[in-house]
Structure formats: C-alpha cells, structure tokens
Amino acid sequence: MSRGSDDTPVVPGKVSLAEQFARVHEHWRPRVVAELNGQAVKLVKFRGEFIWHHHDHEDELFLVVTGSFRMEFRDRSVVLGAGEFLVVPRGVEHRPVADEEVSVLLFEPTATRNTGNVDHPTLTAPALDQL
Ligand code: NI
Figure 1: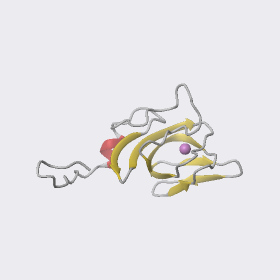
Figure 2 (figure 1 turned 60 degrees about the horizontal axis):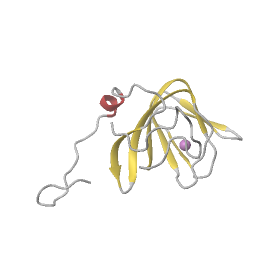
Figure 3 (figure 1 turned 180 degrees about the horizontal axis):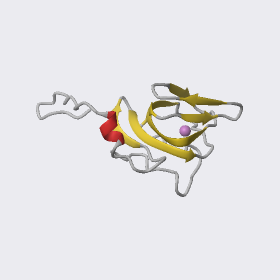
C-alpha cells in the first residue's frame, strides 16, 4: 500500500472490473490491478486451451466475472460460470479451457507465474505486469 507525504496510507481508488477488463486485449496474460498482503488481484481473459501445469508453492483462486470456462484436472473437470470461483491447491495439475472468451479474476501471490512449473515460449507471462 503506498503512503502519503505524512506517512499516512493512501486509500486507493475503487476499481471497475468492466473498465479494467475493457483494457485487456490479449488472452492468457494476467494483469495486476491491486496488491495486498503479498498477494495480487489479477485480471485475465481466457480463450481456447491453456497448457497443463501446476504451482509448487501457491494456491490459485479463479473467479469468473463474465462468461464461463472449464477447469480441467487429470481426473475430472469443473465448469465455472459468472459469479463462481474455484481454488486450485498447490501441486495440483490443472488446465483452463474456454470455448468462448471469459473474463477471470485471479487472487494469488504477486509472483505466481501463470504457467507454473512449465516454461512456455509464448504463454508464460511476465510476473508483474500492471494493467
Ligand atoms: Ni495455474
């Protein structure tokens, strides 16, 4: 949280998800819109199939804002619609698949890499990409 000249915390302005998602034009590239307590609120649009991956040390929260997508696990899949969220625990392999574009809010540590343990030439996004 940033601080003013007299060291009092500066209350950030409110965030419109609709306005911020309107600025997101790439798929699979999370953008940071807020940080708190070492975690970040990230906005991302999915379309198509992502890659299988896991995160050794981080749990990830996926909250659908508009649209829907399917989170695939090795033994099942979960369909998430607008207003629904899912927490993927660390170590669990997962792959998001979106037949149509979906807007998703992520809550996870700021440094979490979108492709987890996998180094992908085009899909791995910069960790600290502010919107
Ligand atoms: Ni992940």
